[in-house]
Image (cartoon, rainbow, N blue to C red; front, top):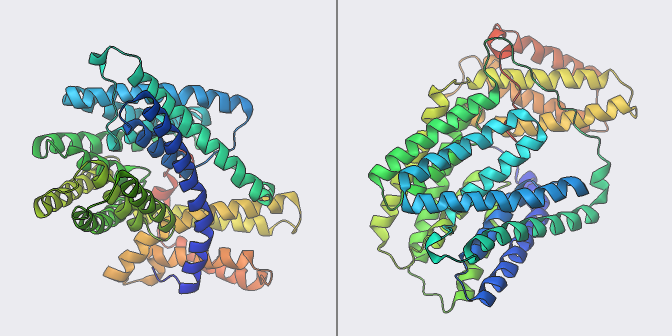
Length: 467
């Protein structure tokens, strides 16, 4: 994306600490759960489940009060237990399991419109269901014992405890970060006839997973999970069409690299289970770390780990490689199709809205004196907008690079680049207000080239997308 080498190194160094904390939390949860499984003399797959849950929890660690933390310690094990029951249905009654799984994920997206508590429940539900998809741990009713359900509950508790411990340690090692002023989230109230962004995304997810299950179970009865997992990744948190296509391309690129590596690793003879586990966790660490540079690295690592966990070691290389790639392509197409056809949002409209919001926030901040509370809140809001533009930029930059721009001032990549430059200037101690004012007026004129009616109808997805 044209990022300077120095900036890439800076991003890698900033991400290194976070990746190290995450992998320690994962190892802690896995080690404790593995010890429990060994002591009980049962299969250690629930230890992998605990690790998978921890990976998801550490992506967005939360600083919770005592009451909220207690509630989460109750929610996560219970939701993990429900996810285990759905995992059982997927194994024994695939169609019933597919309906329950799709309904659960759709509900997790829909809950985002009902506030932070409901959004928290939704994120835990989605995390548990996706972990069950990757790690086929299930409740075996036929055993008639308490052990499998108890292991599901234990995996949830241990993963949350590991996350809380490591998040607390990380916060105490970087206490200065707590002094940053909070971003002021402005809620969106849809007008009559408009559909809420959470409902839009839920319908898109329902369609994507429905297509993925139908095609996966029909065409790949033993590898349908690859189709469903890819459809979820492409559709999850995707607001506009361009983002869906871009994520699909990254997922495909990473999956090709991961699948090729998986084919090579399948020929490696690990001397013992410990070396096998070490390889898996090292790949996981690299994926968490390099994800900050490009999502394709995480896709490659996740594909490789998923292949190892699915027990494909030593399998015939070429047929399995072709099967994986076919599943990933179909899953990506399911996600893209849902985003393009079900209440779609044009990428240029969303870019215009995001840049206009950032420009308004910058103007508001400049209206207050440096050091004032209003100015501090404005700085925090600008950081939020900078992160939003960082996420929004890659698809537009790629589009301009591939297809060019007949009118550069009307291409979203131009607006985003100018706004990102303005935000960078605002952070500089040598900020030139006169020069910035001229650039802001120029950018404002670009945004008014086309009628903004359609973009004004776009809902704010800051809280709905969970990004």
